[in-house]
Length: 127
Image (cartoon, rainbow, N blue to C red):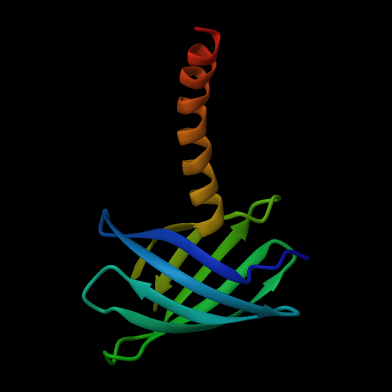
């Protein structure tokens, strides 16, 4: 079973418009809990849900606004570093979402920087 504990950076789409978010998740057994901070007007929310195999399900509740809870379902990648799926509010509003572990994003950025430096360093040492 995959462990989703950690920080995730993601995006959800509502009416074609993307909203970025950061989620800090804690998983104990199949139980998932955590906090989400949206880069939008609603801000902070908390979540509760579960992970069964690679299937992820959670409900997001905003504290600052009396909005309806938002149900998320998704599929975790085999490597456990990417998740994507669909969110739903009641029966009328729905959209797609995805997230990556923050460490993977930072590692990928670091690798791109290092790849750019290696050829220049190797050429200088041959000089």
